[in-house]
Length: 478
Image (cartoon, rainbow, N blue to C red):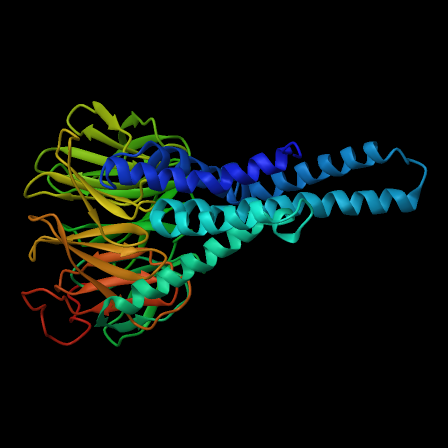
């Protein structure tokens, strides 16, 4: 019997991990914290994603990293060829080594789909893994299946993952909705009661909906990432991610506050008149005065790279999540800056606070669940809402939470008190990878979502009915 090669061992490891994770789920229950699913497979998915798409050093930093590795591999291939004086051999060896390197980069990329499928749909991935394992063991050493085994698994898993997104959208309840903003790449939404504001990712800018239903550009917006609203003054605040500043728009003119590197999100404390800014670039939370000279009055060191912020004004608690490196939920006491932290699992996206109960909701996209914690960060429940929950919004009047599923484009509606999924809504018509990024509850009672196709206005599916006056509402100042 032929002794297994290193490639055989790697391929067999790739195919058996999902089977082992599925068996662990059967033994311990899918609702439990599973080591293989929640840590090992989630870690492999994160590493695979970062290898291809990492831009932590700069906007296009991963291109430099991959180019450098390609050069190193090419030079290594030339050394092995031992033909430094043969130009033709130089070009042939360099070309083969370069193509081989990018082949493995492509395999790492498609394996993202394999790990994600194993986390989200363990039964499907185990079935594919068993079929793949049988095909692998039944073929000869140099057969096509063996030479391209990892790539075939990755392509199969990505294809199945896309089909499952289509199935989730097709089986969701139709919400209808009207697209009120049609620019490509809508990212976030805000509403101060006198107008609707949208930021876009494709053309980094901010826009305001005017009474004649036209959209006006907001000045001095430098690649805005997220928005916040000062309810007392009606001002819109924009976190300019690449501009390292906060833009404050009062409806007539804008002013800017120079802030930290990569401000990613904000929260407004109406009672204490403070603005909290999450700084992804320096792992810090900065505190500013909202009135007067708007100066910085404090800074709290964070142990995570923040993604999202949520404020509980009643209990003076500020929550932030981290989506990369090691998913975390961090809580700050806004009276003294003291901090506590937990790690629910790799990759945590959105966060929202139910100020009536103090419960904190977070989105975990890999297992496709929302998790609920009390103010002391003790887990209360886990609610499965779809394939990829990302941003969250709470409708306090209807006592529901809205969760946008990033890849399928569906909107999950969750009962805050019973902690269960009420329904899943499809918005508009399906398009591949809708990338639903913004979820918002307007002051007029309507629901809004932002995705790759624009902004959608949705009639709430649970009572009471939203305001039925004409759209947009008559502005009173803006």
